[in-house]
Length: 361
Image 1 (cartoon, helix red, strand yellow):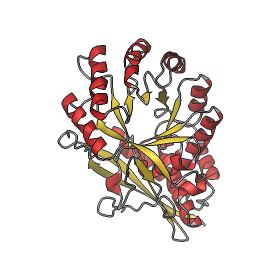
Image 2 (cartoon, helix red, strand yellow):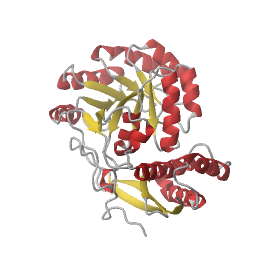
Image 3 (tube, rainbow, N blue to C red):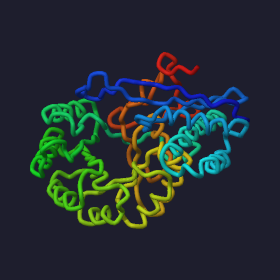
Image 4 (tube, helix red, strand yellow):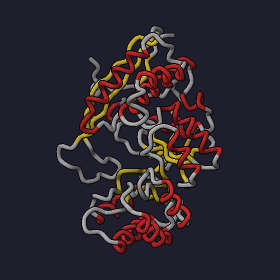
């Protein structure tokens, strides 16, 4: 089997919050790149890419350039394709747009692998289980009014979610009492049986992380995420050692090497992997295996329609982030039931682009 074509399409979707009808910024959108890899045997693989922000056209161009290099190669042999990409992008890697572009192509290649084998990607990767826990994400954002957040948390419970994530490091004139009060009110709204995670997005320093982190321990958070700068491994380790609440991190780093540094420094208790920054599914599996060797669980970041396969495949997969930013691109996506996601039983990723939304030229 040979790759015959790699196509990309610019996609712009509303930046809404559908899980609990969160406040919307009028006219705000999310800019995505849809990717389709075609073969001489008629099989096609799909994926998406983003994080390009204001230079999304450059990301699209990078995918197009790397895709041209993959034409004529066997889509089932991902390592030589990655090797060719690394040589071509040696002066631009390993982070940034180069990795985002190579990751997008890699994900589509695994879709082809699954279709060629007639199996879901999760089974090719290990097939540890068919269903995985999932948590509602994006409905309890720091920018939303507290009154809405409390009501939204109650709504998520009524919808059957057993896990959900909020944020601290509040915008504006915040202080530790305000931060702690927010968690208290959310916990009271959802009860003690719901897992509550909290993302800081690198906004605290070490003293804030330890001080506020200790004050919210009474509310039994499932984890605190990205509490300080993502690449300050000694500071992360200080916070992790000081708190009873588990600390999660990893979504911001590119490739596998930073994860090795993170694990060697005992910086976090939970490894979070972003498929678009990890060199795709191929990179995800390498990082997940490393995490298993360090006795650490793995959680996903974004694109749950794809990450359901990766987390379900591995023995140390903990939960899938359910944030449906990309769902408008597809005809059908996995839907949670009683806090669980079921792996699609179709070959490959089980995804098909909606031609009304994703339009290739």
